[in-house]
Length: 376
Ligand SMILES: Cc1cc2nc3c(=O)[nH]c(=O)nc-3n(C[C@H](O)[C@H](O)[C@H](O)COP(=O)(O)OP(=O)(O)OC[C@H]3O[C@@H](n4cnc5c(N)ncnc54)[C@H](O)[C@@H]3O)c2cc1C
Image 1 (spheres, rainbow, N blue to C red):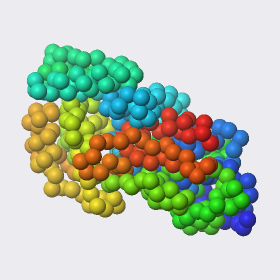
Image 2 (image 1 turned 180 degrees about the horizontal axis):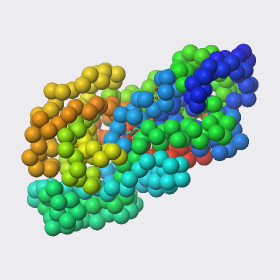
Image 3 (image 1 turned 90 degrees about the horizontal axis):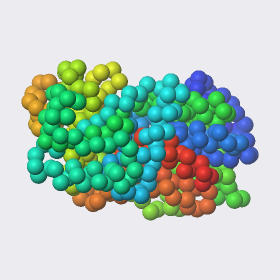
């Protein structure tokens, strides 16, 4: 094999390395999931490369999210989403504690504000319990007022295990741990194609060829296209965009506050999340879009957000909101279709694909990585 140029993430230096014949695993994609997989694999005696096309790690979906550590309320019991979320929640807090990544276990309230919403809240509670989500209780209006004086509701699901995390810091800490155990974390390396060679896979990358025995496809929105390089054409990702607005004044809230999910909404409904800096954010909403790369500010949504916020929190004026960016979900379910589970699939032998890793992918990342590592 010839030499290739690698850009090492840790110091961004360009180094001339000889492509070792014996690369055991290449992880494609340096979002939170790819970094978690590289970290898990680096604990074993395997040579690991992580290839990320952007100039840094976690610049796509993994840094354009709410940074919420979910509890596992919303997904069908026994699904991969539910299992990896409940398990990943605990793993994530433990990791952040030992790695010094900023997080806060804020807790969360999911509100029923009308009598009509009460059955939806009860169903959510039953579903979450069946999924094994810990630390849940149903609380009445008086308890809501004690927990979160600015917020009103008839009843709420109180989730003690929900919280917030520095998603970018978390992603980097995983890559850093992997690199410290010898994994090669390479940014600016786009995978362009793949071909079988003597039982291995020869990747064509923008930094040259790389041969590997095993591949993990953690390409986020690009995962179906990467699967296509291996002759696997099962999936299509739909781009479902979510925008955010920040509240000018935020000091009032201590917990995350969500409306109860309405059947048919591809998101969770516009909700209130908190930043580690004390800021309060509204969103994301959920809208299918044609262009996953278009992140033009959606200022025109200000009044829609103000109306949704007012229903959730009491009067919020449009002037109280500052536009605060957007993210794009990688959805396997198209417009109007029921949500589907995360996909973790091996095909052909030795190539593992992670597809449809929308929310709660940040929370679930360490659990998915443990699962992948067992299969590699
Ligand atoms: C609006 C929004 C809010 C969310 N909120 C939450 C939340 O609060 N909590 C939660 O748990 N989850 C949340 N999520 C979900 C979470 O952000 C994702 O599940 C998670 O970031 C997915 O990580 P990933 O590594 O799979 O994908 P990405 O972060 O997209 O990483 C994939 C990487 O692969 C790279 N790549 C693609 N193609 C190639 C190629 N050919 N060669 C090399 N590299 C390539 C990309 O550049 C990218 O960096 C949210 C998502 C969105 C959109």
